[in-house]
Image 1 (spheres, rainbow, N blue to C red):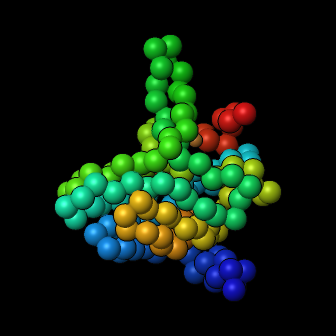
Image 2: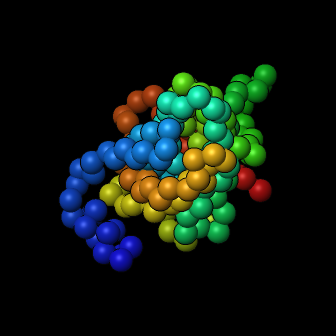
Length: 155
Ligand SMILES: [Cu+2]
């Protein structure tokens, strides 16, 4: 079934961004970029329209490891990534996972990610529970993308 979805995605470019709703959460446009190496990064936006803070606790996908990371610039101007135990989405807030900041790290890929591929994944929230989403692998923007996750060393 997943293979069929992948084939259909490859046939039907460009991919259409998809939004999801889970309780008080709206999950917008899960996507990824082609990877040069054996790690890839997932991006999306999460809006919490409820009255209570929720937390993204984990993401699972068909890779050996999937982690929550935050990139930041250190004093020496080096980009570093730190693993996060969770990502908090305060009531009324939108948290955006994007290049240069918070992201989902797909690790130990057996093949690099290519444009048009789809990554089925499950997001696990503290309050809202779980939801299945699909990260669409899209073309990198021509400019403004400074991190190549594929070349970062996580070990
Ligand atoms: Cu990372």
